[in-house]
Image (cartoon, rainbow, N blue to C red; front, side):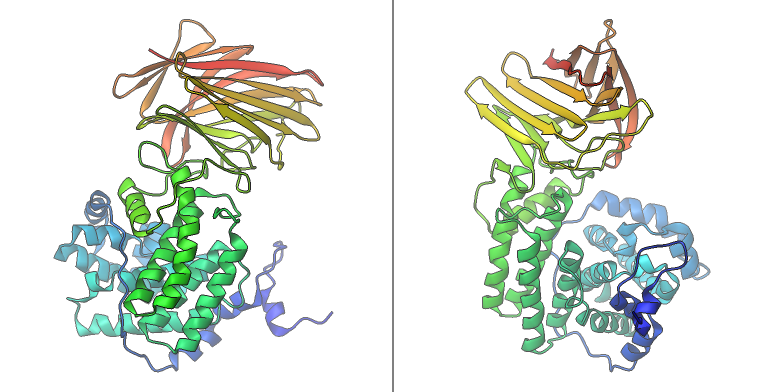
Length: 505
């Protein structure tokens, strides 16, 4: 079959088997840049306002650490290539929100320098840093923070900025119709919609973008509002993006379109209540700590969604179990953010405002050190009464079976058992990733450890049916966490059981 010009150009270098879509090849081509440069730059007529609070401490830290590099002799390539490299915090202009929290002239000058140096150097940046998604995020942040950094700017900077904003807007217009439904497409649509409203494009163009957004959201969301990827960070970002779009539509006096977006906001927000712990932060089950408590509070408040959070999502694979102020959140669908894990039956545990276990999973390996993975969803049953709650999950795969039982009781904080049977000889490690506020110490017994928090709270972790217990540290969720491993040997077609408990002092 004969390939078209763009299909040939889309083929990657030898040794890489994946193909790049033709529209991405065109997006990065000089042809599109020349076409966009011929367009007459139009002025901004409306300016959106990002309502999310920034982190003033992180803004001060950014100024103290990187502000010293801002001087006339420092070239943009040195800054972006040697200093921040591909840090998404800078390349998406997310740092502007934290600088706005600082709000002084120094932070404004630093913001303008960063934006101008990016505009100068952007064509030399790797393609993955100029992807449609990151370009749309940069455009949305630059527009949303415009009043902060641009009001006191001189005409020279404003001329450079307005050319950049308008050309990015033109480049994004046609992309959403070519992209398959995904969270990345929602990000691109947000940038395109905000810029279309900012430049007062025709109602027909804006309506087409909003119609495409509605179709994409319908395809990437389950009926209960959870995203089909089952990721906590995507769920949170979807709520943020939709609130930004709805607010700007209201400013532009388009209540009909704003109401349609509000319908999806009311779908994606209740799952965030399920995923929130007593400390005010969201679940770590997608592999990262993604937002501050103030940011989450702002999203839940501005969403205007009053529905209570569900207690489970069979589609996305989340189970929530409560007893008094103790909470367990489990992922029953496959996940791979921790290395060597089977990918199923993660859970995290908190008591009140104290997060104790940030993740617990099973690592299985054959004698040949080959990891045993699974991509099946587990079966779940649970019940709760006044003085205890029970959750049981069972996973059956072709080569192994795993049953996990968890009990919350008033006498014992948390206890459980893991039954594992493998068709192949190998090894099993039950892993508990503990919150970094805790210190892990060995117990006089070789099959127990003691957890001590910064507040002085103590938990004794005991095991039975294991060959040994070891501790270590890993970098996960953006911090250094203590880890507890309970180890056993697996024999073919023989069920092995590990019993364990966490008891408060």
